[in-house]
Image (cartoon, rainbow, N blue to C red):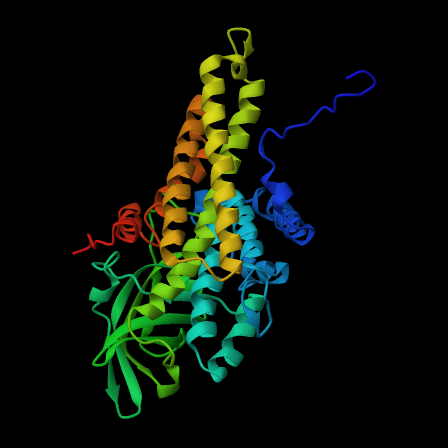
Length: 395
């Protein structure tokens, strides 16, 4: 039309469909704050941590000061942030490294959530403020050597001895185990599965690190051994009975993974995009070749769709209408697609993609663990399958 001017719309090469535009100002502030922390504290150091197979214990206090430990819980020094805000923090932390996000997830969504949801007032007062500040570190003892996808078969057993409990058993693949001050340990009893709040200086409790990992190396992974571990009656989480207790905690952690996986995917895509625009072969940047552009576009499609899915599930969670099977849906999709993005990004980088000079192989290796922890893809597939058919394929 004569006299009108066509407005040029700018499209972001990473957030192509402007998912960020759906965030509130407060949510964007949280995103930018955590991203800034990751850029200044995590990224300059994480390759070294990954190579050395360690994560500094003092990072707990730094994450506590940042306000991300148990940030979605109310009271007891916890900010009471929204589910979306917590998810955004998980995404930004995992854009740094899944080990850092795992630390925060285990602390907040497993150890702290278990006490907050299932504990009594004394347990909450004793542990939650210190855990929120990162002054104390927590871990979550559910998985055993032979019982991962089938936690109900656990062999760890707690028996009564007067008013006390005696716990015997072994837990495996426990994040933060050897650096924790408190462990949430799940055990069989004569009355079914119960949860116990176990200070790690309790006699009979021990933890040793698992070495020679090729994934989640910037994370402390441990084996817990409880041998004649005597606990007082008040160590029991009074509101947790049966598998519903630990599974409720796992659902919280899985929700964080829905977001976190997209952080790792974004880091891989951004690295591949930047590399493709500067790496010259046959006298031109490889980003100008059709096959490379196809790879980048396919990565971008799944990155933006997965981030939009995470945000949608977060809004549902904040509205109190997110079912566990929908969390499984999100975890199944986003981790699977994040891993595919990481693998595709690695091919764009060629031989450079297998070095720690770039983050891609680190994220790719980490995602191999994320794919199977907090429920394998197979288990989440069957959860969704049962929901849509009404038929149980687990048995």
